[in-house]
View (cartoon, rainbow, N blue to C red):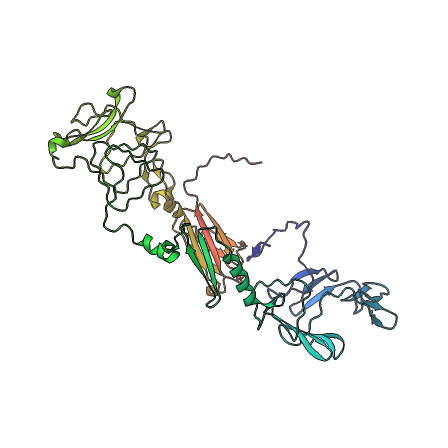
Length: 499
């Protein structure tokens, strides 16, 4: 990608060393050539210039032909002396002195495509492709086999001597297995499979009349009158136990259930203790109610709560208990005395959500003290700088926001269709400084372009801290964008030396 210049470049009589002009294989046409424009034609190795009307060749030789180039299918050529062009041969093609021959036996052709293509020995024996999405095999003057795009094979007769694997639907007017019709073969096979089954609890009878198999559950007794069919068994199970209550065990029995027990109704326990020896206790209800019963009062609620038992020393049990007299919870290990709320030390490993005011004499985060006002050595509260202070660039106590940083930059679009003959535009940035960087790029190609930029008004002589002027010299082909960045307040730390 080349750097685009839209202003003339003056070398002030200094040398342009090791320069190379534009290289192109043909005459440039865009942008429109101007008189005096030059380029090097890499096709014929000539230097050409434009005289305002057309391209002219700078040459020390005479004559109209400057070279003979071998085109497609040819070899040879040259740019001086006697030259010869030769025809190139290829696979299946032979170039002779008086003709170009095509070899009869072809082994390199990879594709022959034609909407009327037919291959064969004569008109009665062919493979034809003239019908869209079909291959027709014509034998003995008849189109006997047709392969279709759907996968269907249409044939007057199909004789398969080996196996046939059908993944889809097989449709036939009749199918025989070993000379027997398929439906009779299935009936005889299934009937024989169940007719001798007398040793199992399920017996089966195949009914040739309606094509069904009847299953009967046998209780293996001599009395066959109490056999239960599958249908009757389903009906009895679906009926349940009716209104009869079910009692498991007596007062001295312990009932053990080895697998899961699911109760769809309420569970009422009339005993004194419930022991849950489980690894995980899941309760759907978000509220657990304590002190509920016929004698629940404020006095009976006193001391209600949760105890975490210390198996070694009961005096160190951790408790969360309700103090009815003061209407407060008492934490055994965090409260100085029941009814008070003074913590001598609070170590919280999780999150803390304070809806009110958090007041503290000192605050430490991650082991580092946090001060009321941040400085260059200590973290703390800061004040945000507004756009004006950000543009000034000298405040040392306020923090800069992304919006504040953006106020030090100005972006302006340049509509080339609005340029006058002078090709000069003036952009007001109001950054209050001449210490600005200006860059211009083509909005279509996104390439940087070079132009004359001054920190002045449009007369290019009156200095300004609020505007910049841009002289394009030649109007760019596309709309441009100017990027203006303020460096106001920048620290001068370098040392200037003059040699």
